[in-house]
Image 1 (tube, one colour):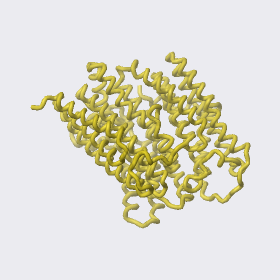
Image 2 (cartoon, one colour):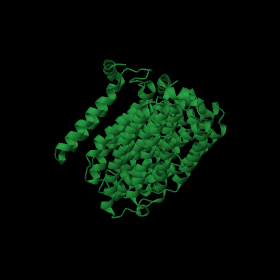
Image 3 (spheres, each protein chain N blue to C red):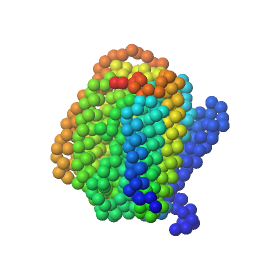
Image 4 (cartoon, rainbow over the protein chains, first blue to last red):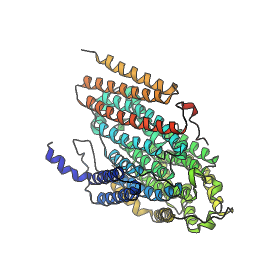
Length: 478
Length: 100
């Protein structure tokens, strides 16, 4: 392969490249100008995300690996790139209100978010160990920075340090697993490893697989690698949590799907057992721990752990049905979680006050439309019809039953019932209790529009799921 | 010629020292050093496997890991410093303001 074909392949990377250009522009503007430049930086960031989304739809797809077999731009990665860009756009929209009541703005986060999204976009496209490791660490390291970015708040600094220490520990263990995979096969390409790994020693292959999964499970926050989640989510600025709880998780799930399709495809029996065990433990732990939380941010942290557990059911019962279910659930989860955290931003006050369930009292009287939309979101999080959350859970449980994992489906349904109790607490506080009347809030139009848009999507995908399902099954990896 | 087992064994030993250091030490700076030790242990393992398979990708992988390790150290020191400005401590046991 010569250089001219490398240039010709650049057209496949147009969305990533445009995002890089915009983030460098934002970086330079922020670096060389005064404090008032934050508006320009924010504008450049959100323009870059929207431009990248538009370019993404014009980018050709190819089922053959590009760049000497290190990157693949297929329908599967296309779908996940949509999730990341949407998550980034909504995060920046929510930043507006957050930094308004905090009174000081950190301009760095806008281009850091862009760089992190570039890292995630390359992660879902990578089919080579080296490309995967570099792009995975790109967004992982930026996540540590984003968690600690709000320097004047002690809680943010602490969240950054905690996330960093646990993150580098897990990623070093994952790197050891990758080194073993390379050592067993002598290859770094996923497809070549896939054909070479079955000849290797079974025990060593399983050990390397376990090490590899540690890093991924940590990023998804599955029990027993979830300890960082509540602390980091509580300390991190809330708009950043919107990004943390959706985009990196989706990226890691995509990588996990690609790995079990290629590298570890010969060990389905073994990883199916691991995933089954982890799915059950994660669901129960997340939902039971969420029951006793008073801080809504911590409650939603445990709720996101539980949702990762539901998605792991799909991974345990791997098949064509479950891959569609997982992708459907992930995009619905993006909108549900964003709306729930947007609610927290709406009621939050300076320096982390107003995050408790009691602070939601009487919200229905203050913002009736928002409260109505949040009811849709809460129903969807619980998994009740006619919302998209119900359809997502239905697909996942159907996939489990089809593969004979009856107990797993029963455990998932049982957990939906448990989760009803704590989601209902939020609804009860909003509608049935009266709180202090205070209407001094300005600049909430962006938060409101995010919540309304999310709930409209959830209702639409819940009532007419067939269109989305058809789209997903047409681009899912075979 | 150094035997391959020795190279990979040395790498594993260094990785284990780093892992134990990260798990039992309480000082943030020492923990950062232990993390670097883990990554460098993996680098030696990668180079050893590259030698074993007679391919260059092991050493190239190790080069990229070095690059990531530098970025990680830079970010780590920045985060630890920004925490130190709030509470003058490096002790992991005293980082416990977030609790539910």
